[in-house]
Length: 290
Image (cartoon, rainbow, N blue to C red):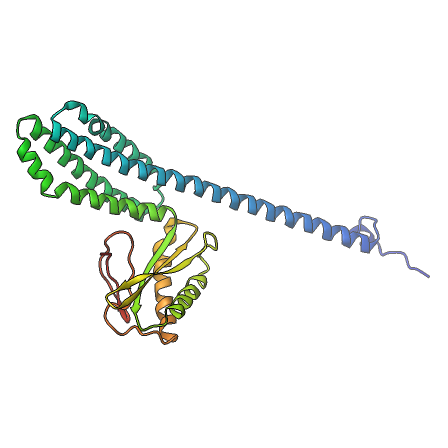
């Protein structure tokens, strides 16, 4: 004889068979969880799209700024050679464009103190470069063309331009969230084994994205060393510095554990596209780019 359900059980199952009620509850929980996961995925997708748009806008602004500076320099050189005012058009248009690009970049990089500091350096360098261009143009206008050419030949302007290119390159690389390490080991090491260990170190970092795919490339020989370049990408340019440091520490440990020699001077180095302050590392030397 089947006993009737207890009153409290009846209320809990809303008058349904207990098995049916449990199945219905499980289905509701499943759909709620699925909905929550879908919302989280949409939020992550939206954030990723926003980061892509911001990165693209940053790269465009940086490229445009460099192009504007090159146009200004071309206008200066054309005027100094010909003394024709029509060559000054690119120079005269450059200053407002540079100011506009700097303002746009300050907005794009406002939440990153490190990149904002680099941008401030760039702003100072560009001010010096524009001042040098203005100085030489004014000299030529007032009949001191030979003195203006001497300023150009002093390489002051070229060095400022190179410095601006280097700093813009840093921001461009950081905008992409790119981590790059230069690794140099003695030529008598097994190149394939070095590459394997380097890839293991990269893939061991959970912050490194799987797409674009990380790479370890043998770039060539330099002073009896095999030179490799390690490239990886992370989800935010704000993370590049910390991840680069952690990757280097892990890489050093893995190379030693694999028996790869690091005792000779300048066995391992890390560099970006710009000069960096040298800093000693265990078993090797950090060197700025040549």
